[in-house]
Image 1 (cartoon, rainbow, N blue to C red):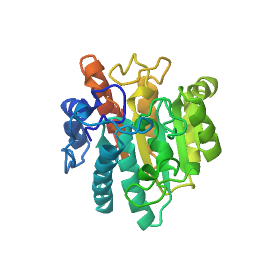
Image 2 (cartoon, rainbow, N blue to C red):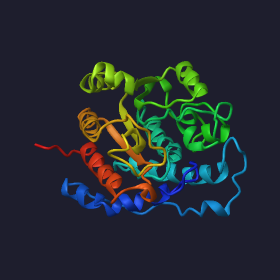
Image 3 (tube, rainbow, N blue to C red):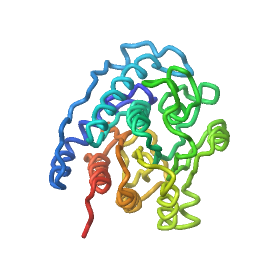
Length: 295
């Protein structure tokens, strides 16, 4: 999903190509998976050719149009028993990914949970956003907060109960979104929690959170959750993030729940990367999520 309309720094539209060039298909096939589609279901336009429109929700019309197309593709794949793996693009693509998998879960009477691995909450609305960027509003909208055009995408209702959302790696929240997250009742494990409790305990708590609460999990992984030492090629690099070892372990452990049904990996920006190392790490993370183990 080569969409970077939701962010201020451009270049993440090239992220999917960078991840593919880092050997994603070959890695997945080596694990015994069959890749059915590796091209985008949509064709985006250059951002500079369009008017951003509402300064509190920039590029709302094209983002909702393309995320609607993504939702339909994710829905089709999941309904067919496939594993939708979405390559971003900026995190606004989560609007389409979560909408698609949510529709299938609803049809099956399943409770959907979201593991949101990100340095940021993405829980702003037009009332709280300091930037107007939709990648900072996508999870709030998926939980039923924000503009109707975002909240009602694809099937006209909220996509996930915020009580079933679990964050890992938070370290940069806006004041307004922090208040809304508390009001909504999401569960959050910040970098301070990780430092205080240790990462193995955080993983234990994450798995306990989902156990019995949900029937299926969507994993939304933003590469900026990682410390820039390990992932320099991302749009909003922040110091004091997860290590590569912690992120790989988290993916391996959440895979062991047996109920991960879809995932996205976003915010790989080759313009800012060094020798494609962020995309290479993205491939390793996906591999762990889809069954790879060291031994």
